[in-house]
Image 1 (cartoon, each protein chain N blue to C red):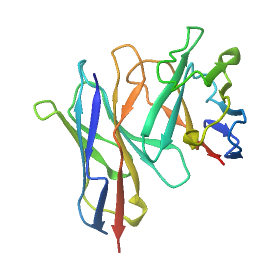
Image 2 (image 1 turned 30 degrees about the horizontal axis):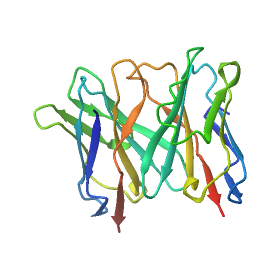
Image 3 (image 1 turned 180 degrees about the vertical axis):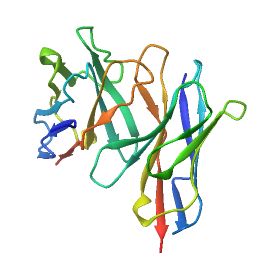
Length: 115
Length: 114
């Protein structure tokens, strides 16, 4: 497809389990962002990748959260030992580069529910 | 530090009426400002952006916004609301001069009444 693709679209898991969320950015986009959207906190930046540079992890809420981007394309966000407060919609976005005027193209998100 | 405030978490208008969604920002660098729209169970879609140049910016679906530096505002308007405009709207500002990282407002839900 032409847009940003995220999988799964919905994920329900038990507290304490690990989860992996996947993002396929638009082909050719070198910048990739992860955001979290929750009722209490709104839209929060988590992490971003730009080409081969070290990722900006400044938004990750705890060391249970990590992300990687393989081959400059697909990214995986991993949450270890999930907690109920991790329940949220996780949005991925990509853009041509990290330039501040570049529009970000968003996927439809993964809705994560922790029981 | 950068921040965005959207006044009014819910706005209700009648179909055909003017839409006005308010956004005020704080930025320590020249601001680049964005409006995004989110429909239920979907991601965010860019409506319009301001970087430099003309302060009145036109976007998709008949929306426009005016950057007013003196008022630190970037309000979103549309002359005539359609039922299809019902959605959540987010204003955002870039974090720094060399990154596309964004800070978002809390969002405004627009309801359009027939």
